[in-house]
Length: 127
Image 1 (tube, rainbow, N blue to C red):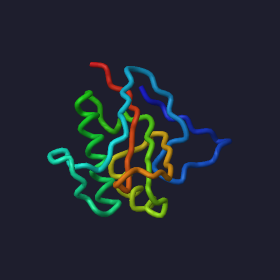
Image 2: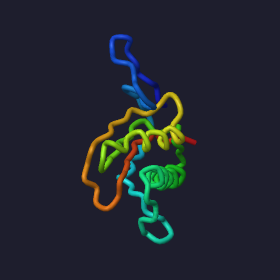
Image 3: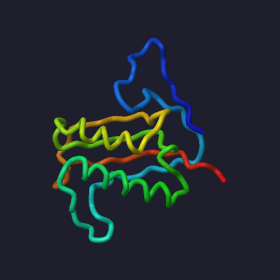
């Protein structure tokens, strides 16, 4: 179960995220994923958009393995080497998440050789 919490007294979201999500059920915590090709372990993507897509695809396969999808994600945390790349990352991120959007934190962080990384928390649907 995931229920968006949006207060009329709070600031309106300015992107694909929800201020708070009330979640109940088995939780999946996905460690930060980088933009590494699963077949080679190498960083192939060069642009922030390409790297973001690889990061989100790497998260997708872990969600699927647990029996979840992006629709079950309640919280994301995005790490950007350069905050000037926010718009490019955000455009790709918007391809993966749908309303009600997960709660999200985006931070500037030195993340090794990659330009973007992300982790998520999801509620896995019970069968």
